[in-house]
Figure (cartoon, rainbow, N blue to C red):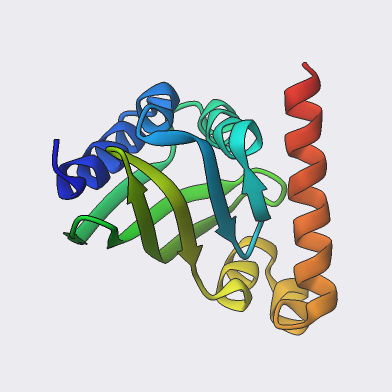
Length: 154
């Protein structure tokens, strides 16, 4: 499987709500990073996808395009559409992903998106007022990591 196909398989699995299919694309020592969770490694990164898919119960819509890859690195653009469970607000999050590969697996996955734009959609006026601050970014990361740790304990 080429690295382009590996990225495509990752997002096709995501679109089917198949966390295990996504995780099979990852190396056991995966390093994941994004604005909402910060840096996650290994099983924490894998469990994040299990948690996100499990909590959304198939109600998240995933689309992707512009998949580009060579022997060592790659990228893709993807969009997640879902209802943020804490507020009931619809979110359309556009994400730029970058990847690094080794031995046919993803070893590093970095998602970049506008956290302020996300927080405005997910949290309304609170996100609009505070979403751009380091305080809010820190609060979001603490909350998402608390949810992940709670999920892992179950």
